[in-house]
Image 1 (cartoon, rainbow, N blue to C red):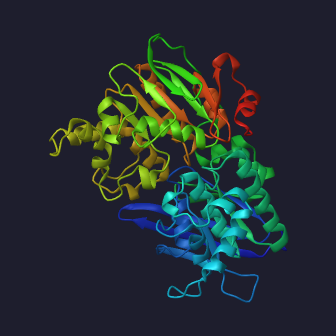
Image 2: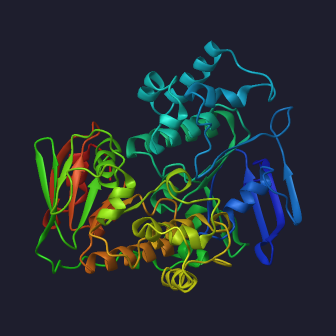
Image 3: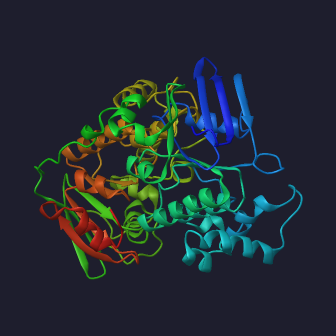
Length: 487
């Protein structure tokens, strides 16, 4: 760390336990002015716990934390969490302006709210700034909500902005605009930025230094990124070699057509055991996903499959038909936060079988599924909040393992998970496909789609299907041309 860099956050020997589980066992962390700082570590390493302690969300057990400001004010930290924290019944403008109220009882005039919201959103997404200021946050997509959260943080004038997986739901263009804004803020205002991500390419593009946490302890503190190779970073994180991250594509043994997806001027036959990727901005893939999971109220897409209607009329009917769905939005569309792990794992079975009462055998069933997924949990009676983000994502996949499914839909299933967890998820999806289940996979990471899928249906930024790529046609340039998005 350069001598002229003012430490804005200094953490020494931070410790925290939840019951008998020691989450932080001696964390050191230094964030300096004028730097973009990558905070790295596998799922469950302790990154989110440390952030919550620094920002006052939970109490530390031991250790020292000091905060500084470059202004004659109290130090201010703004955080964008991995899971969205918008107030559903307030408008976009109100959600952004609420952090500018003088107190919890005060308010910002509607015209001022609009000014603040428009200015903040325009930095990242001018179209959203012009169209969404007065929409309820509840009516936003996960993708749009992420942009609003980032805009709110950028508008605060904080000394430090902490971004936890901020690009997970952004397009390549939005990510580029966000990075440009962050670099400009650091240059012009000398703030500190903490960037949490599992995407090494983005870390290299944006960050100056990195801290690596492993098993609740700091193994690298504020080291220049240029001094570490990707292999060294992965090794310090205790993760598998990234070069072995994605298994090789296998040939499909099942030649039967399982269903046909029919859209405007487009019909896509999907074979049993096939992994069909959906590529592009959310507008297109979300239509297909809503059709399949039973949430589409009207759709230009229909499906054709033996014994199925053109469109499931509800999520319950979709499950009864043998359609599974794993949402990338763990918080609002996935994890049942108030129910223990065992109820989360067995929820789909109970819905499909129409069961109300719990069977005695369910405990053993749940333990088998937890072990198969390598899910790190203290007890299956614990709440999902005790799990890391990656293990919560595994929880959603566990619901469908061992069930007789004709089709399963994955919506950004590796969002915000580390390399090791990604590899586990890839193996599980391969296993489902090898058993003859059709897999529909939407990802904004083109590399995932190109490596894992058998065919890719590409959509442009307006949501129109532009082409179906066969495996022999796979390359990043072809996919970028069809989607209008960088790889």
